Length: 406
Image 1: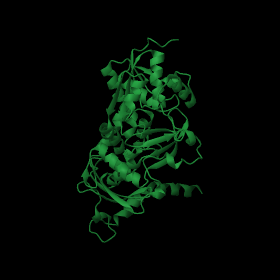
Image 2 (image 1 turned 90 degrees about the horizontal axis):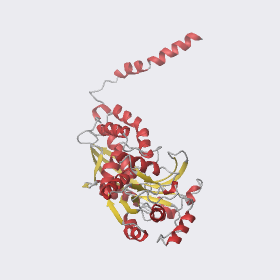
Image 3 (image 1 turned 180 degrees about the vertical axis):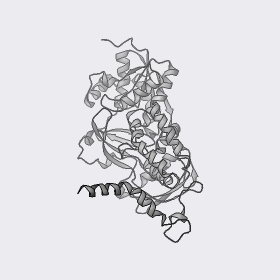
Image 4 (image 1 turned 60 degrees about the vertical axis):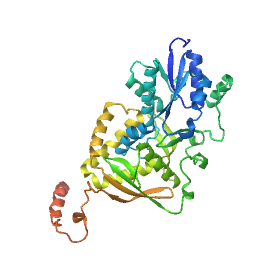
């Protein structure tokens, strides 16, 4: 059944790579519609240099490259880091947290362009299709979504390359680096090819942001990160915007081989998949944030927040950034961060970063008069006896009951 006439204008989330270049041409051929290419600049760097030219040569009527770096760091990465959100204890959610912002800007362009459809290059096996489309419908419940991987009969990279050759699409492909990657200010991810063997070590040439830890400097480096209400605001005394701060931490972490993770994760659609990630700046940021929290946050508030983090992280991973439950949790999390003001001192050395100091001039809950091992005049150690007996009461009663049954 012909698709022509179903759509007048579509906005495509476009990267200039093999998949989206073919999708652009396929939309023109199959739907006969005008295609507006859109690319979100989230810190990919030189990857975006030739995107507009590629898009127009492939059939796009226009190409929008939208600089979202500051918005990404300020309104997406930082709120997530206020929660210390890590999916399944390992993944810093670098791809997941980018998708709602990419979708938001895409829908804004669709509204501006008067488009009646949006399209993306996510496959029918992955998480991204869910993340993109849930966000699309949040902004426009009537929008038509075109997901070519769920429609066309091309199921392999060789089939895509054959299509590109047939239509003269200028898409360079590399046999040397055949894996899939996704990069932004927070991380770079790698999937596919050799990584589909969970026993095989990721090749060293795969890594982009970090040096091999064994090759990192033999001298440790110390970095101080200052926080205000849970957000990092300065590195080594220099105040920086959120995006510039992330870039600075990426540089420091990359130099010391920090932030490499190789993991098997549980996709929302049900399968397990392997991903290799580099998150140098995010790894340092999370360590520093926890350090400042440790000296400024109330114990029970911290424990309550931490009990909700796995659920919060899953919401982001599964694509529910704009959902009311995530917004409700964010309000609670942000409330816990009002006193998270201070600085942390982090030691960077050969793939590791660890806290070596933390301080808060205004909100520290650490009181040396109470905590000291030396003599003090504020804490009566004899009080601990009653505290222990009351907390042990249920165990004592259970022991008495067990003895009575013998």
